[in-house]
Picture 1: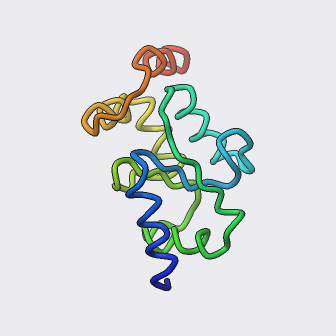
Picture 2: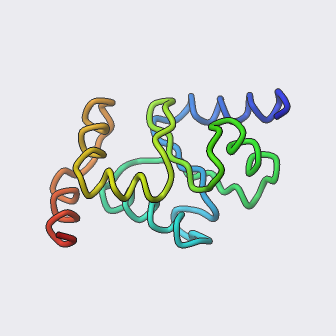
Amino acid sequence: MNEVVKTKIETIINDHDVVLFMKGTSKMPQCGFSSRVAGILNYLEVNFKDVNVLEDDEIRQGIKDFSDWPTIPQLYVKNAFIGGSDIITEMTMSGELDQLLKEKQVSFSQDAATKIREENS
């Protein structure tokens, strides 16, 4: 990955507490996996930056190289790579995502998090 792309990715991650590199946008996801993670974050009322990798091929490949993770979407919280769709879904259902957001002091709706688990148990 070239330094320009790496710096661009680092700047995005450093400038926002929560970043979702995804296909499409939070309002208009372009794949089911991106839609799932964006939907979780929106439902939990997490303020996050969406980065549409379909608009920039360098970012699309660069984020995979940056995280050493082969798929999109990718979620970052306070500069740390958390995972993709399956991991975020599992963390949501187990309550691990709640704990992570609390530890990182990221605002979210605890009531919504509890309701997701109740509705899906």
